[in-house]
Image 1 (cartoon, rainbow, N blue to C red):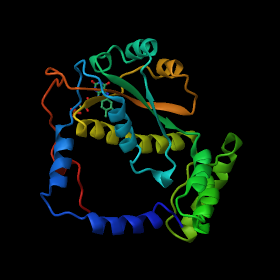
Image 2: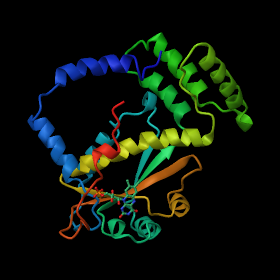
Image 3: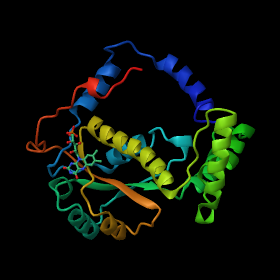
Length: 260
Ligand SMILES: Cc1cc2nc3c(=O)[nH]c(=O)nc-3n(C[C@H](O)[C@H](O)[C@H](O)COP(=O)(O)O)c2cc1C
């Protein structure tokens, strides 16, 4: 049993029926407007982002879909003046960082899956927690992530996976290496980052995601461990008149979308 695909799929199917909307509803128009008006903004005005607005954007960010609901993300809002100055420098003094009302480090964690699995069982909304859910978070999740010293468990997992695949058919690969877990955490956290940027836009603010920063220096500044990975910095604020540097364009859909 996999809550990702079973319980949640059923709940989603019924909520989709409830919320299914025909084309051109205000809801769809509003969504299009948010997505289409989001741009990477490199210059912001002096207008601050109120704390309650930022808190709502972060709340919406955390509603992003995420694997097994393990929520391996963190957001560091760098408000301290001295830290902020050093963080801007670590963002290579980019205008998007320098002029931002708020500067946020978006962090993926490779070490929280175990604690979060336990926390899910403590905070699970349905009581008593169904046995299938308990088993999933105590056994399936553990087998997915455990690597053991010198990856010794990973080797056994790899062998077992090959056998099951051959004998029984398709099986989802578990995570064998630190890099696998890092990819997993990064995938999940990137979805939250996009939610955050769209939420800012919906609130009338803008953002710029930045990969152009010195990660080791930023990690030292924020006192982060080897299991905390800054996947991007986000500068946020009100768009200045000269904040967008170029027209938006994308390649043709046909280049990327394959109906198979
Ligand atoms: C992971 C990532 C890293 C980025 N890094 C930077 C950056 O360091 N500096 C910058 O000005 N823009 C950065 N961008 C913004 C992109 O340049 C921008 O999204 C792209 O040109 C498309 O423009 P649009 O966002 O306005 O549609 C980054 C975007 C992403 C998703």
